[in-house]
Image (cartoon, rainbow, N blue to C red; front, side, top):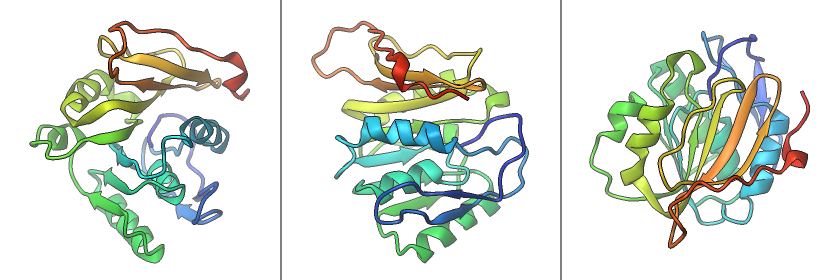
Length: 207
């Protein structure tokens, strides 16, 4: 989970599930900033009905806070993609410490990884690239072959720079803080090919 701006904390915690309150290290890296606790809590409240048994992709994993949270709450499989070798090594160490057999870490550039053949499909994807890199459009387009029918995709971006979803994706929920806009989309499965707003203001935490 990466963004621009404030310095990262030294640790971030898993909020709920079997690894509840586990602290994840946050190395000092330019642009690295975990998704805020309150945003993650809102997001996983949205996701809880679909998490048990889901296959999950954390595409720009960073600290792994989103991927480990999903694994903690019942995801059957979590694949984390992180190009920084030291961050990827840290993710593997955390997975080993947690005995997280459902977590796999790939040390690779996310866009290059998406260009591989897609032997399996994901039910849920976390997309939170470094804000300064502007990778949302390329990543969203590259994701399409990797998504199961009805898959959910979480997108985090600057509050003032909202990326466009591919045609036909349904906007299920969204929220904002002063710094970020976060949104959950669903790939249609027999639904009309239109983007239907579903913003619920009470879901947006105040910063």
